[in-house]
Length: 209
Image 1: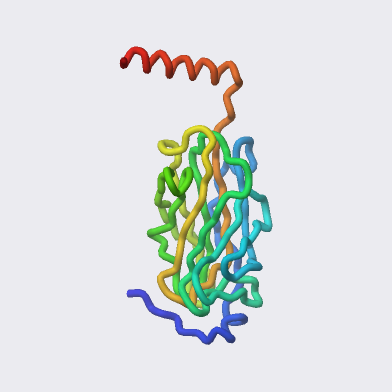
Image 2 (image 1 turned 60 degrees about the vertical axis):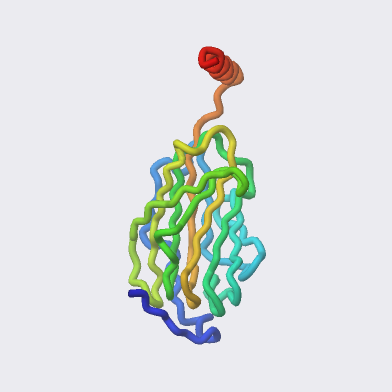
């Protein structure tokens, strides 16, 4: 049973501890070629505006939930409503994305850990992938806890496509403490290899016809 944490918005600016990510899942390919990384340990825009990553780059984070504030700790706190977080790309996409790992640290009322989603492509013709959650650590309640979410993108990402993420809390009084994003892509084939791939696809199409 979910337990609502009732907190005065004024007190919320100081009552939540800041622990950043607790034992995050760091993929062994972080920092390799054809990867992307971004991390937020604090936030500057409570509602509607972009929050740029403090480490790495490639995405901006937005909250579209009502009544949010930035706590003195730098947390993004849903004082007057549930958090509704969208993370949109702000850089060129990777080629043939294979996997994404997202770590999220939160306190107070929890985010919905079973509905953290990635969107490959655009809202009009893209594909949603739900992340597999794994509890990593933290005490919960007023102390942040961290979940890692793993996304298998290998069967839905082809060529250069954008990648966005979405998650939310079910109740107000949820505090987003930190988030990191790692994405693994593939090397772009040389022009000659791309031409051969195109010819192979053309030949297969002719045989089917």
